[in-house]
Image (cartoon, rainbow, N blue to C red; front, side, top):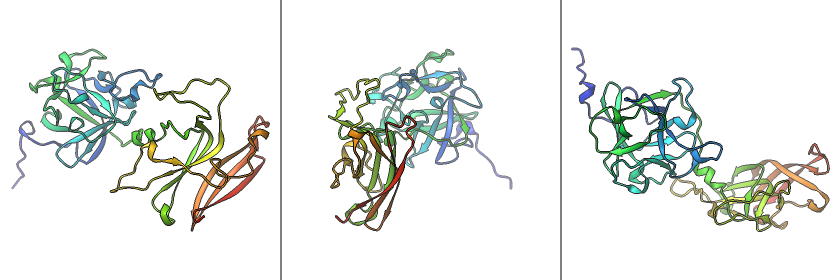
Length: 328
């Protein structure tokens, strides 16, 4: 007997043949306008990566859309999805849990709130309604607009094209890891650096922790002065590099989750202080740039190029292998 399939327009499911897995990358286009949902703002000012940045619609390429127009749909396993923007790493939400009709939706760092969870239900012809878990309101192209820049809002579901959305699949793509990025927005200790390496540790009390080494490091209170707004004044050519390298120790996982809070990961000291390794004379213009770190037993071995700022090419004139003993 041939299988009888239900009319998709009557289906009450959060998936159809478009969204078939627990994870996928899509543009999300409105049926009325054909425009894609995107994060608003200027890229030159970093606005598309801001918390609470509003979401709008805009024309999108069908083959190579902008990254701020692409979203990862991630099945939370509870009947809801989070929709994460590839460009910002932030997720679609109803800001402040607002229940206001016509309130513009926005993006924000993931915190697992109900206002960041969305139910995707088939309405037919390959389209979905997208309902917020917290408010019960539907994602809406405000005013059924066909204009670029029209805001995306929430409203009571009325089952028309302004609230029908098509998920257009693309190959899985890289995305900005918002948690890890916030990890480097530091306001104490080592606040900024040219380069960084990470090394998982297994020895003793450090088992499960991560050792981070930095190059050409700004240090709060030693030339670097990040204000209460989280911003640093422009120093022009007078870059306040306090240390050629420092090291940070990140806590291990708890209940399978990493702690990416900057305040939980502190600078470590050796018998050389914050600079970690000896034989470094900043007054003589010397530099040491770590480029590889490995743990062997209780020892952390760090390979580093060494040179002098007097050499305009900044080419190393020697190398060093430094030993940090965790048992000391």
